[in-house]
Image (cartoon, rainbow, N blue to C red; front, side, top):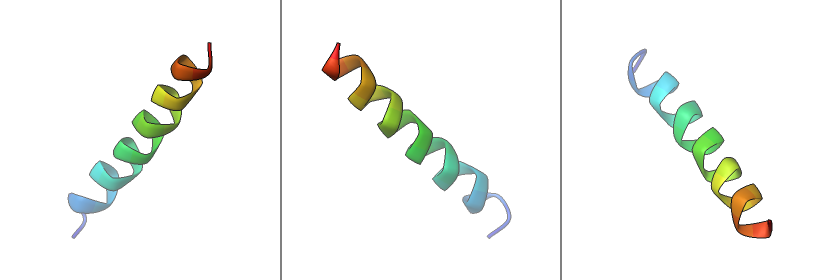
Length: 24
């Protein structure tokens, strides 16, 4: 689970970044 946790956070950050780019 320790490895899955960081991956989930990264995915969440990537999604947020994607939304920001889409807005622009």
